[in-house]
Length: 315
Image (cartoon, rainbow, N blue to C red; front, side, top):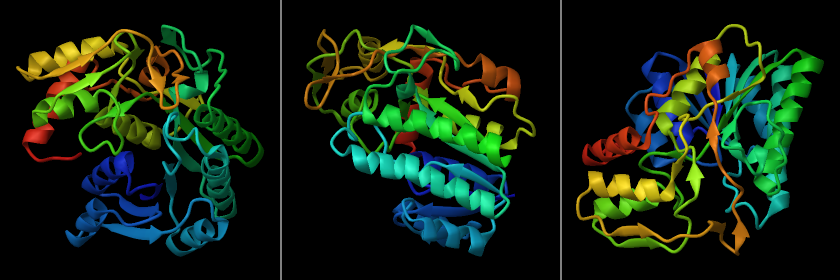
């Protein structure tokens, strides 16, 4: 199968592209630039074509579909992160909503029906302790609003044009190489590098931290599943872990780590309160296409993180 991966040179994209190549799929990576990892993969002879383009440009997308004729799409290109995207909401709309519409229009015109795309726990806004796909969604930051809009547009294209656009809601993906500072990476990176790191708030904050391997597993299982009864699935670890618990686990795995987190609610830069988090119920994905997290708890996930770093593997 030839798979177009938008944003394929990024953090999640490269992890996915490597798995697609390993199992024998042809891959077309569409991204704003060719990353070092992607260049190395191509230099090593992988069956990968790289297209440099802008997801907000309809001509770039249409030309890619015309030249490469993908059979399926994994749509990862986006402005990411609730905190980092608050300062430029128009650009977030342009990339996350406009970019998705460009991809689906190209799919419609070139008779490509299957797309897997990533959504986020931010679409719920303040979450429950346990969250199913049908729980009420009230996002209040630009990132979550655009991702929920993506979900609605994708389902509209499913109904109007017979596309098979399947969304996966993920939560706080982690592993070595995450390109922005965020727990649990901030804690374990400091511990492994012998640095002090002391977060000034957030000890009680809980999040469903999800290992990159599990996100990629979910994408591949959803991509391969022949007939989807649902348009959206949760892909998480199924466990909500507090920042304090992360610190405690890292200290156990890396004795002598000089890290800590202080009490109080967690805020994004600028003092904006982070939406309340909870765990993602994976029942629908498990029952439909057999998704089971390989790392269903932080200790196993962080132990793998340490192993990757010590082996020099960035994903």
